[in-house]
Length: 112
Length: 111
Image 1: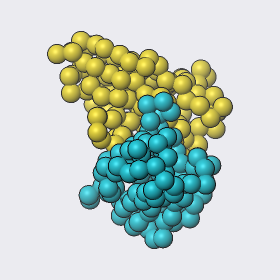
Image 2: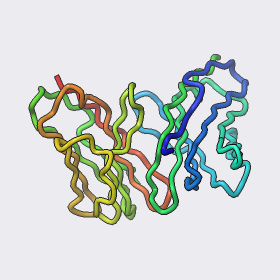
Image 3: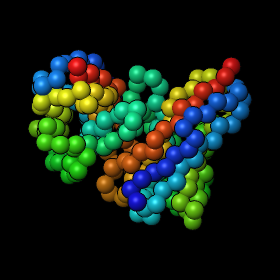
């Protein structure tokens, strides 16, 4: 029940495409859902996050869609660029604890 | 702000040796986390401190691992004795509220 399941494991898109990464959770006590971006040799960096009281959040080219009833959320990258090539992790945390449970990661490659 | 600072960035040691990883969180942050990243297990939370007090160490794999946070600006993760299966990248993260900020990590190789 503590798991966050992430798919796909890897993804290749052409420049300008819209990669979509999906995550699902079981624990309904989770109330904060961030996405992290990690480049090789670097630590994960917070990209965007959402709380379950909204269904969508946009920040620049990055959008999170959230489906509370299905316990699923996804990351969309609009007009993807080669510089977006990285590993993306979804995560979930329970109110007040700030402990993240991470998904297994999606390695994204955007072709020029 | 310099962000979360970790040292060393790389550590190579032999099985049985003691290893100490260090972390300086972002000033003003009151929560500190140690994570371990491997290809097989992904990002695993080892231990979580709040206001310098260990809150949850359920992720610490075994007694060979210990972590301390003697003050708000410093934490250590110690492995004694180290084993080859401890080889991983160890990240420290800090937060004030829900947004966690990760350090660059320490790549540990145990031969």
